[in-house]
Image 1 (cartoon, chains in turn orange, yellow):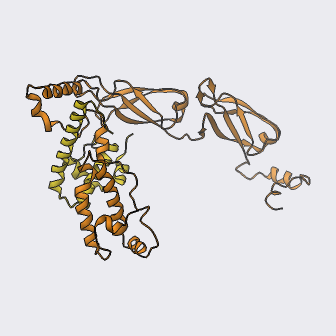
Image 2 (image 1 turned 90 degrees about the vertical axis):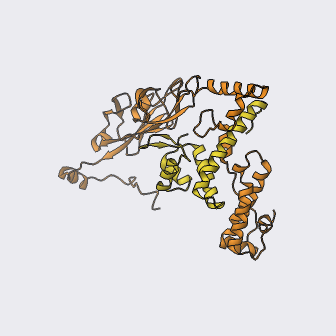
Image 3 (image 1 turned 180 degrees about the vertical axis):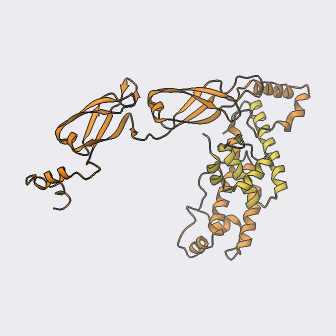
Length: 301
Length: 90
């Protein structure tokens, strides 16, 4: 690891202003976006900005001078510079500028021919893909739907949501992107789906979880109750003596997945009557549950 | 990957007012409409370049526009040349 003072070319006693100036001088010379083809200057710029980061922070500089920290870790994280994106960007991106050689193409030599052919290819290149975001309702994500997306530029696209789509999944709509700058095909629309949470359903993988309140009577004596599922209510048998927290499984009532469906997991929640009930109170004060009934046994040994 | 305006401001270390000026100067050309701007990674990287120019290299606002225009032309030329030579560079 090289000495940061050496990298910036300043004395160990340099004032903060000298350090800043030394960095500024080197950054102007070495910044990767001003030297897009030069790997070496990129490496040196990383060293220089790492050294600057260390020495421009009075606290870090003091600790470095005292030998408490070394220069490692001061190197800037792997940063992607503008040039990296500009090099990869599809033809027709907003920052593209071909005016630097427009005059060359008018000549009648081999170079000009090549440039013209290239311009021709660029004209036939497909348009860029456009990104959109669409939030859909929970049940539409499970059951599938067709949603109309209103575009910021005006116009609409109909988006077919396949059943069982996941949060963050992206749908590609061929040819619904931006038109080509020339005569190529249009790009694609990429629609990123976000799913609004549901009031009582929650999804974990392909399974749907729901909390189902049941009355004390239903829990103690058992009952057949109606339970909501994404495809409509079904009848569920609550076994006799079901407690809060008991989970009942409705096979195949979850989200679609390849070759079938997940399950719906119904978690029971025993609810006492909301109003005080004198009869229940009278019964319970005369009721002896027996010695084995201590639900706090595990908490208070 | 779309970046919302809020995330963009955070990642580019910008405030709303500065962003408005930069868009007006056409230093940045986000997609979307004025009501809902959409940014991408190239915009973040470009904003960082502008920050570097102004903060670290002491370029003034007039200079930034000139430099960006030349940088864009350099990339145009590099692409044309890469195409001519039949090479692709990362």
